[in-house]
Image 1 (spheres, rainbow, N blue to C red):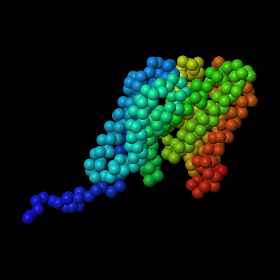
Image 2 (image 1 turned 120 degrees about the vertical axis):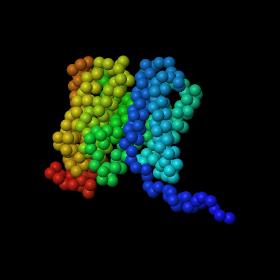
Image 3 (image 1 turned 90 degrees about the vertical axis):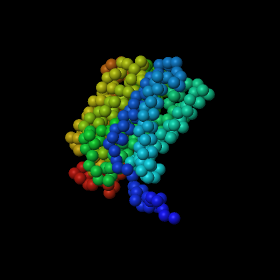
Image 4 (image 1 turned 90 degrees about the horizontal axis):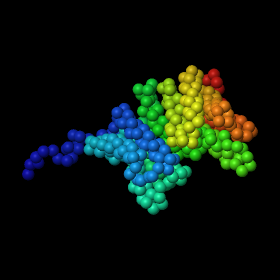
Length: 365
């Protein structure tokens, strides 16, 4: 009997399965970061609602903003995944390189969201610090970080492959992805935020309260430095960042925390201006002195001076406005401590005498 039409084997030979991953897409990166920033805005509005202890339900307006951002990113990545699988890309390679963790993040978020609903029904709604430690909330933000940092991973992969990405046009989605990461981490460590803890440093420093003030001041310095220098060292992988990136990262994330806590920290708005100024100084230093991984001494200097300068100005601002009552030994010591911590972090990121750093005029140390 004659066979009409091509057999399955013939058709597969005529249309072989693609090899590798689909090409990178600036449109996909842009849509991904658009909905991720939409989601993070919803997160901070939700944080404000918790801070003000508004009557909360799972179907609140702030949850709608948050989950509609998630719905948008799910549709974008889901459509690309299904379309490329239809084109015979395998399941794990149907998205551009760096995007498969984003798909896993969507799955984790999708599991955690209904779990959050059940959690609220069983244990009630969180109103204070407990909201930052609720397991469903931590699962939600973990999933969000996986898809919100997809443009960061794609830029990293392209840079490692030798692509020359420059300016906001090429690196804009990556910078916004870094901003998403820094904002998310800042939100879930806001108990150690300079904005949140500034009022406590203005309280009377007496026997009954000094332990609480000391712990808040120390945790603020250490955790803020870890976040700040961690993002700075990560950004050096993409040198040169477009000018203004550090201003956005530092000033923008601080401003969002102030937005959530403006009722208790309204008088400390100059800290937001100072944070943006420090970011601008970091932009000027990174571009003026060409700070990158091939100049490790300059990296170590900025990793030390950036947190030290930020906290020195931070304490002086409180002193000049509301009044800084934290004992002098503590706040001056913290300026040195964050400088030392920043220096140690630079040693981890760029080990001395490593083969990855060329010995230039500033040495390898």
